[in-house]
Amino acid sequence: MTKPIGPLPPVHPGEVLQQEFLEPLALTPYALAKACHVPRTRIERLARCETPVTADTALRLARYFGTTPQFWMNLQSNYELAVATDRTELSHISPRDAA
Image: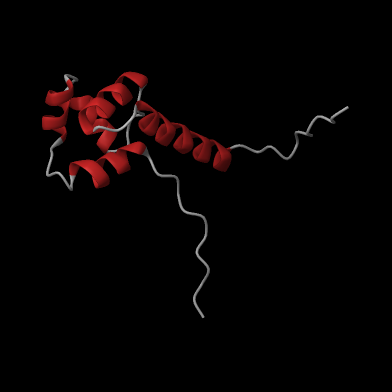
């Protein structure tokens, strides 16, 4: 019998960028930054999961990769909610009664 697998850790948008776009396309963060007209460090830090996707970056990545800005922003939003859920204690808050 195998041990049950717990919940998966949140996926940072930088991990998606690295594994689903940069690696398969043999694209470096420097080349992507140059193509998107942003500082190299912005893409490097994003790909290392050190910084979030901003609206500006989402627009640029969407344009370059043919995705939507919502794709990138949803990745970021889902990541932030997952991290907050893991860190936030809510049991002391009672839901408001519907009247």
